[in-house]
Amino acid sequence: MGDLAREQAKQRSAALAAVRADQIPDTEMEALRDLYESTSRGKGWRHTYGWDGGEGIAVSTWFGVTVFRRHVTEITLPGNGLDGPLPSTLVHLTKLQVLDLGKNRLTGRIPDAFHAMPDLNDITLGRNQLTGPLPASLFSPTMTPWRIDVSHNYLSGALPDDLGARVPGICYLYANNNSLCGELPSTLGRLRALVYLRMGNNELRGPLPAALGQMRKLKYVELQHNQLSGPLPEEIAEVPLLNRLAIDGNRLAGPVPKCYARLRFLQTLDVDEAQLRGVPRAVTARGGVMVVRYLNDDLPEFLLNELREQQEEGGEGGRGGAPGAGAAVGVLPVKNEVG
Figure 1: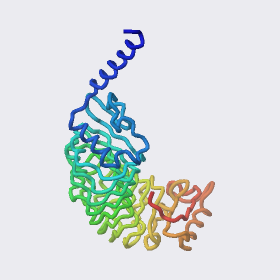
Figure 2: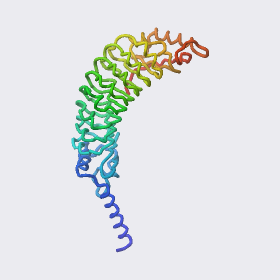
Figure 3: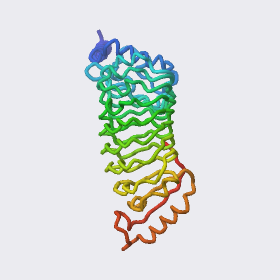
Figure 4: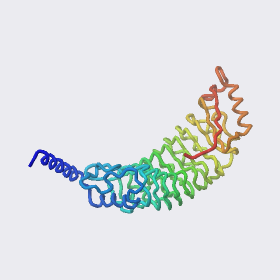
């Protein structure tokens, strides 16, 4: 055997050894193959390396796939042109930790498969064309997710009543720009680790739950453009790190509670005109720049007058005991958009 033949044989042997080393269970291979077949067999995929059936290619080298100890642990294919429904065989990926299929053209329902994935902590299915209700297993108590993103789809139905008891460790919950309905569950207060609650542009109704005041790590609340009603709960003033509260485009009644002045980190307050009349002075003045977004480009004259007065009283040596009252107050009237 010549030197070239020996080198080629050595390379083939090394390749086969690599394939055997990260060989995954047949059920997991089936799930990967079904995902490929179900989403147009790669016809619209931007990257298909490994997925298109090349022999001798280790699964760990497939585009967007991570393998650890002979199990698939990550599938990350955002914006890769996947077109079609998700297969039910995803349930076989029992060691999956990250599933990122956002910004594709996925259709149909989200498979009720997540109860078999106890290690799954990052689910990104946003910006697709998914329909139907949220599957119960998406909030399975057997999982430990820190982020769930199903935003910008066509999902419908209500949130589970026991949402807070199911995924208490979640930090980011994005479900905006869908057609979700029903009331916000009172168990939201049990999501003690939640930082970002994004539910704008849905069909949610009912009151804002007072339990929001129990979410001490919450920084961003976006519930704009729903059908929420009733007064604003004073308990929201107990959320110490709250930075943004967007509740415009609802049917909420009454003024903004004066106790909201205690929200020392609040920078953006998005409300409707009926609530703006009750914005506490300390809230509108707080911080170097307070951004107030409104439903159209024209802010009410009473608010402009109030802010002008605060600017005149501010500046170096200005009056006012509230934090930031001596700083310049800015108004940025822009149209509301949910990103």
